[in-house]
Amino acid sequence: MSSTIKVLLAEDQSMVREALAALLGLEADIEVVAQVARGDEVLAAARAHAVDVALLDIEMPGCTGIEAAARLHRELPAVKLVVLTTFGRPGYLRSAMEAGADAFLVKDAPAAQLAEAVRKVLAGERVIDPTLAAAALAEGANPLTDREREVLRAAADGSTNAELAKALHLSQGTVRNYLSTAIQKLAVRNRTEAVRIAREKGWL
Image (cartoon, rainbow, N blue to C red):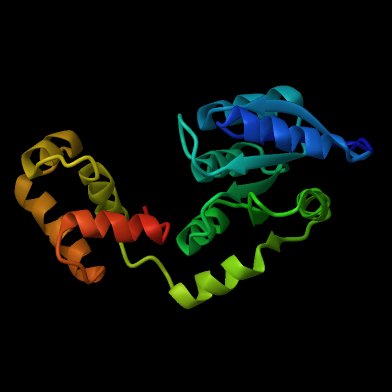
């Protein structure tokens, strides 16, 4: 491995991406060799530039940073994964760790902390924002099954049960059951509240 750490930066907001690249570029031992604005461009860019560390924003078009992390972890296991988020949602932390992330930080962390996290994950350490770690432990596991999450995500745009059934290739009764179970688990009154609570906790 070269003495310079080669970093891929995946962030859909160009101003944020360029600011992060500029800040990391000030570090003598770190070089941002690739930048992408979409989650589905991460794997190809990481391969093309033989990166050591990938910094992944969670909210991106194409696929989320957590989905991109899972792909990278599967296809290029040597690449270290740092997931960045604007939202300190405990469910995101759990999902990121399950996807193979080595670090999980909020975007407004000091630049020096981000650079240090890059060095630490390359050295085999795990770096997690302590506030988020405490919140994730207090929150507990996501109570929703994969299917319940899938139906809730699809319901977020206000689709009817018939529309959901068609889109997800399920019967209307099955869709109704998944929604009802999710609403009960989240202790809310309707699907709109279920979607809101699940999103706030990072469970969708």
